[in-house]
Length: 335
Image 1 (cartoon, helix red, strand yellow):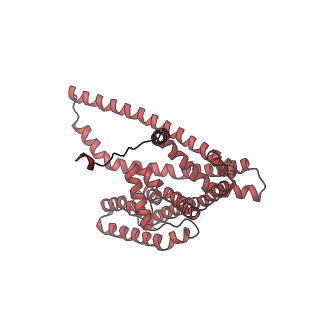
Image 2 (cartoon, one colour; image 1 turned 135 degrees about the vertical axis):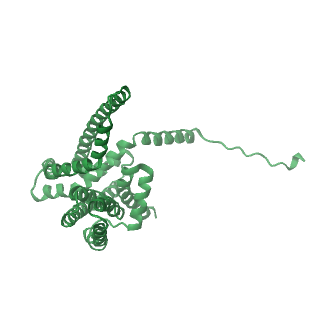
Image 3 (tube, helix red, strand yellow; image 1 turned 30 degrees about the vertical axis):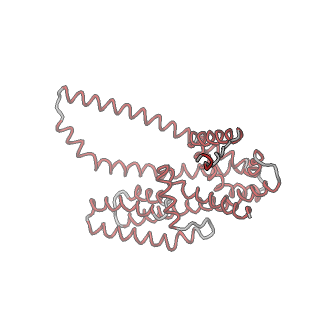
């Protein structure tokens, strides 16, 4: 019976395959380990493609050097930011303080009224103060890290802008063929057109929606119109989902402040704004920019949120645009 046994087949793996597999796995682990830096670099790249058209226009129209053009664009960018902070932050803080005081003051009064000078209450108070001190130190540390990260982000985007005309040559690490250089240049130009246009379009949309919501809530005498409008404008970065999420706190505040009838009016106002946004504002603003299907937008945002939380949701559409562009070029040149 032994003569019917099939001969064994030996599988051999070359040392080069093993080395390549180990190196590939180590590379994946390293990229995952530095994923926060890669995200920061991707954000800097998004800012670069958004600001580069303005820098290039200054450079060509007024015959300025690229460095001077970048400094002027950055200066204008910072002036706009500080102007917005100067005009918006004081009333925003005041309205948020009034809102928090309205929510927390009864609880605070109850605690003060029921407080008795006992060892148990004193120990609880000390524990609360200790937690507060730790929270303050944690807040200071987080603030310092955020400022440092933001400064690093600005520096990275600045150097990307400075090196933008020669950015396509960075593939020299992988290839030195002229055809590959030209392909890399086309891909970066296409990404700048689509991704940069999407960023500029989103900024316009966020500004328009914030202004419309603020004017509408002010005319309807809804309290805390400014923070609600800012929330609506910022959530506009999440297409289709943002306006719906922004309506929830406005409806809750209106219900407790003015009753169910005014809540229905505010709900109708948000529905009208969303219809105008979907049918008029978004098509008009995004006509000459990156075109992303609404269903694809929602799916990408949900996947990004599931994978990496809020940051993943914010970067979902830019990542989709980049992957779509790379895939289209791969299909075009793989045939």
